[in-house]
Length: 214
Image (cartoon, rainbow, N blue to C red; front, top):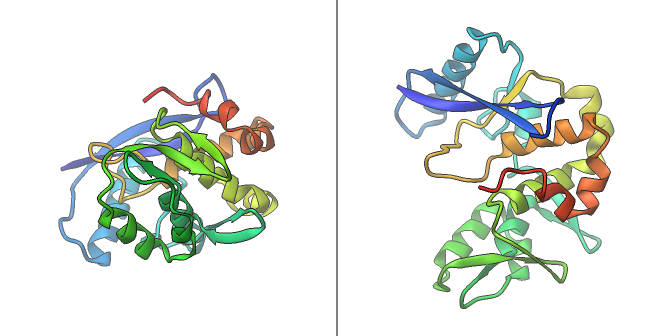
């Protein structure tokens, strides 16, 4: 058995997202077919509990929209140039012995992750982008902010095409990971519904103050 979250936009209260965990039978293995079995099982468990429209946001999604919203598919504009979102996140990392690596922005997402993992620069101490420094806490703030920023220019398309009860990312294991594209998208939907999207995109501090201090 496994337990994984569904992220639900929260239009009431202070929290941007409601997380609901569901237990389901886990299909072991690394093949795409096994991962899709787990997506179906998680969604079925959520449906039994009243969440009927759920979108998997990842490269494993059966839905074209879910694949399009994957962090590995999105691009973000940095100083007039577009780069893969994941590559910008990786290249913005600052370690004890190494600063940000803007040259990583030009790599594919997989190559960017491999490059950063191969560095021997000590502990991660923060992020730096466009001449600004960003903190590690809340732990998911910088990643989520980049993700939301990458979506802002597609706001009209998202409003017309993406409306679900909740969002999942089957690759995300909360016991081992912090960043999750499904949670970031649910945050985006909440900000959009509340009319706070553009200020959150412009102001990292405004956005990060809305997150729990994990």
